[in-house]
Length: 123
Image 1 (cartoon, rainbow, N blue to C red):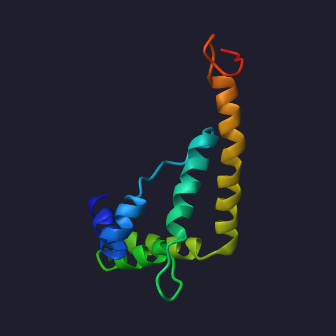
Image 2: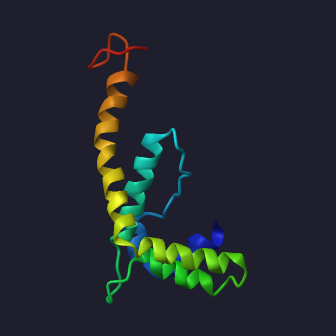
């Protein structure tokens, strides 16, 4: 994680790090729709940061990290570059991020209870 963040700061520069903050990854969980939606939102925030050639921050980051690794991680980074360059993967991330609106409203509906809540709850 330290190398990842250091390289990300090198690519973004201080101004964009101050604007966007540093990426905080989340593990994907099959049963955790809310965490997956939040991870998609975070991914897309940085995916839309591009250099003058239109290359995504993720591609720049993974290419730079390949300089540090020459083992299985190099191959994994190559696969990640293919994934983040694939339009259907990016589209899926947008769908996942859009689902967050639905899931947030459901979470608020069922997650808030008591006499001070705006809505009723099952809890």
